[in-house]
Amino acid sequence: MSVQLKMSEHIVSIKVYLIIFLALMVGTALTVWAGLQDFPGQLNVIVALTIAVIKATLVVLYFMHVRYSSRLIWVVFTSALFWLVILFALTFNDYWTRGWLPVN
Amino acid sequence: MNLAEGVTVEHEHSHPALQHHFENMEQQREAGTLGMWVFLVTEIMFFGGMFLSYTLYRTQYPEAFASASNHLDLTLGAVNTVVLILSSLTMALAVYSAQTGKQRNLIICLALTIVLGLTFLGIKAVEYHDKYVDHLIPGQLIPGNHFNPAVQEHGTPYDKHKLHLLPGATVRNVEMFYWIYFAMTGMHAVHMIIGVGVMLVLLYAAWKGRYGPEYHAPVEISGLYWHFVDIIWIFLFPLLYLLGRHLEHGG
Image (cartoon, rainbow over all chains, first blue to last red; front, side, top):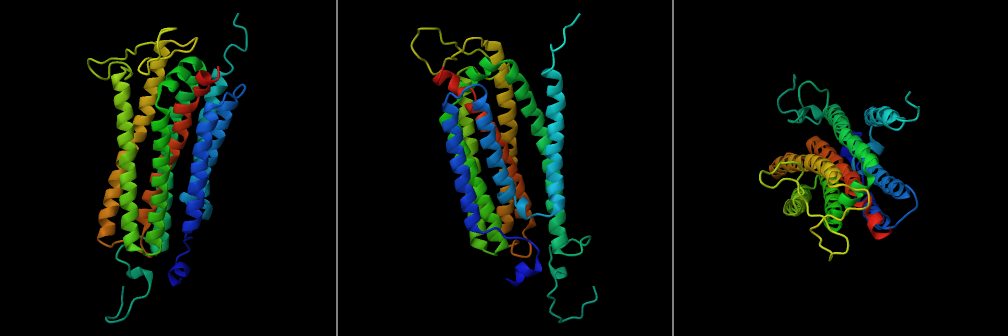
């Protein structure tokens, strides 16, 4: 206990780790099941990516302790997502709009 | 430090692992964690580029990507996902063991993580070999075995070694999928191999009793790296193995 007081570090309990592990297993089973269903339109992609994002978020927050980390770590991690969004947004800004305007 | 001889040092400064340029162990640990996160940001951008190229080509050739994706072994992919998530759990428990000073558990958890990591790589090797047998290694990467898959003809008996092309798919665009498949899973596997190497170093140091409640930053930041590699697979698995699967089963 004295150790914990001395260090500001948060120790995640085994129970939390096990719950997150179970949630990840359920997510894996769900994503396999959903992959074999024939959903209308682009729903298959949306379902698969939603499950993947939820699983990744659980890993980042609990296994990687970001939930208990300093603001600085949050900023650094969010900056990665920010640049990733720019990478995708600007590239698709080009690809998706090709052919929108008639070429004369 | 002007510490009189014989004085019991209770302060963290006494820890042999504390580098001279840090005030205390806490600051050193924070700096290490931040450094690893900055590295992981560059890794996210690195893999991000490959995810972008996957997305671009998949939107251009959806039928070919679905056909190629259906040829991958879903069972092996799913088993590998479970293996990797399990290894993330043992890694997390290794960090817990170090934080709470459970030396024996730390060694067991690190060893389990290594075994699970190697299991993942072994299954991956089996998959790569299956692709090699079916002539699905793209381009002419393997001399004498260039990309030349057999295509299943309509009405002929089902052959799992043959490529089942959906309407609108061409062999050349399937090859594009396999370039991306091998680039992404290959880079992921390289990260796994490095990860296993890091774990071996940790295991050695843990064996020597270097980690405990005061000092376990190496275990923690190596754990961050290991979980990051797990996250990459969490995205790779549905994108490579699952999307398009419904086209063959449902329609």
